[in-house]
Image 1 (cartoon, helix red, strand yellow):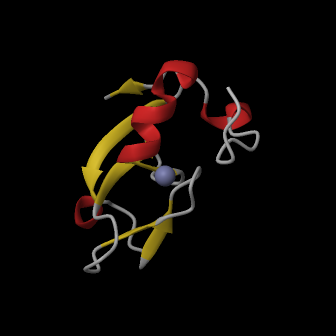
Image 2: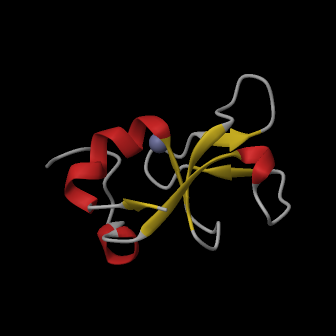
Length: 79
Ligand SMILES: [Zn+2]
């Protein structure tokens, strides 16, 4: 698969568990996060993406669009 958003993420995001959550339900307080693929902003602000997928520790975030585009090659498991 050739896509500008792919940049070695398989090293740390392949076969991982993901949570599908609203940004304001995250445990760790932060102002915003960026999608690991397209770098779009995920936050509570109007005009940004307010829901997404994240790793169990909420460190890496993936927007819904990238999730749908790459789920077949990354084999994510939703928990
Ligand atoms: Zn994205």
